[in-house]
Length: 199
Image (cartoon, rainbow, N blue to C red; front, side):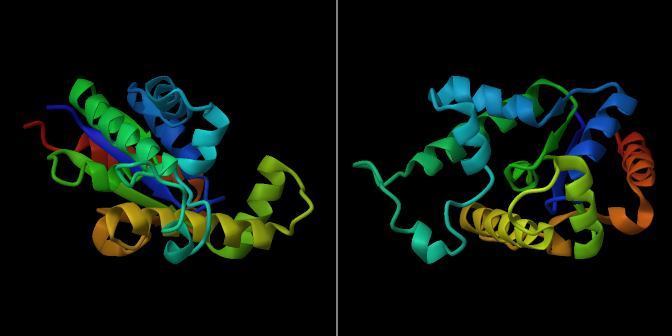
């Protein structure tokens, strides 16, 4: 039986870095940017477009997103990305043990055994400092960048899962990377993975 780790995260919390380091330590693949490439191949859409629309709503509110352009079946371009993403994540979970970062993988794989669903978060001040160090300065304040990304990511998650991102009941473990540290988060997740039962 394949063992899967899903990493959901707040923007700037280091979830992507944690996912990659967990995969490297365990010797299994990590799917993050690689998912964008696979979805691009499946849909024919540009990778940058998928990066921005495969995890974030175009607008913050569900009401505004309800009026996006749709085809004759009532599907928006974002809906097509979601359907391709859903199929690809299921195929990856069938194929091999791996780490999957973001893209509602925790929800998509919710009925499968041997899936460790994690959520990485940290307080605003710690994340604001980190995104400036990692991504550099922009015209927007780091706090505004965090607020915008978090709200759009939460709205996307709500839209496609009908659940609230960050709600503890959706995950097996929630880790504060600002308090625990990225390396300790990696160690904890690896330990949990190694203790999952092989069915």
